[in-house]
Image (cartoon, rainbow over all chains, first blue to last red; front, side):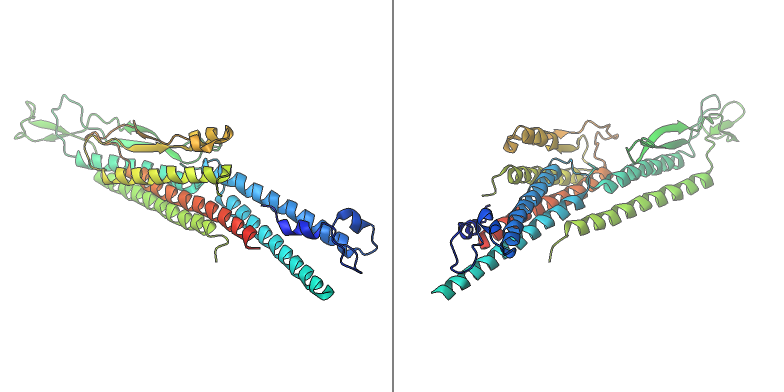
Length: 107
Length: 136
Length: 113
C-alpha cells in the first residue's frame, strides 16, 4: 500500500527558483530547514503507518485464534491504524495540491 | 470460552453452581415426605459445596466442590400404624429435613443466580461498547 | 485484495464462529430432547497452528458431540453454558467484522487519495 505520488515529488524535479523538496540528500544541502523537516516527517509518518497497520493485523489474528486478552486492545490499535493512514493520506493529498498549484504558477 | 470476554465465563461458572444448588434444594423439598421402614436409612438432604476454581492462581470462577449428604440417616420416627411400611410398633421413619432451612437456602441460591445474571448483562454492555470504538 | 494472512485468518474465524452460532441454536432448541448430546464447534487451535504454518485457510472447523454427563433423559445440554456461548460468539463475530471493516477502510483510504 505505497503512497505512490509522493515518490514522484521526491524525484528531485526542480521547482525553478525554489530549493528542491524531494531527495533527502538534496534537501540537506540547502539552508532552508523547512524542506528537510517535511521529507523527514513524511518518511517517519509512513513508518508509523506501517507499524500501526502491522500491530492492528497481529492483534486481529490473535483475536481470531482466541488468544487476545482484551478486546479494547484490538479496537484501539485498529482505530489508530485508521487514523494514521488517513492523516498520512491527507498530508499526501495536500502536498500534491501544493505541487500542482506551484506548477500552475510556472506555466 | 472465557478469556477475551472473561467476565462472561466467570459469571457462567456462578450460574452453573447456583443452578445445581437450586436443583439440590428442590430435590430435598420434593423428598421431604419419603417414608421408609424404621430399620432403613432415611432420605438425606443434599448440600452443594462451592469452591473457588483455583484460588490465587489466575483461574477464576467457582466450582461445585462436591455434594455432601447431611448424614442424618436416623430421620424422625413418626407413629403411623396405617402406613404399609410401619413396623410392629406402628412407626415409620421420615427424613430429617427442615423446610424453613431449605426455603432460606432456596432464596440464597436464587439471589446468587440473579446476581451472576446481572454480571453477565452488564459485562455484555461493556464489551459491546468497546466493540463500537471509533464508530460514527 | 483482502487475501493477506490477516484477512484470510479473520474470514476463517468468521466461518467458524457462524457455525458455532448455528450449533448453539441447535443445542438450545433441543434442550428437552431425550438422548441429545450438545454439539461443540472448535476451530481456534487448528487456526492458530495453520497461521503459524503460514496458511490460515488450511484450518479444520470441527463439530463434535459433548461427552459431559447426561441428565436422566440422556440429554446433556446445559442452558447456562449455551446462553453464554451464544453471547460470547455473537460478540466475537462482531469483533471479527470490525477487523474486516478496518482492513477495508484502510484500503479505501489508500485508494481514495
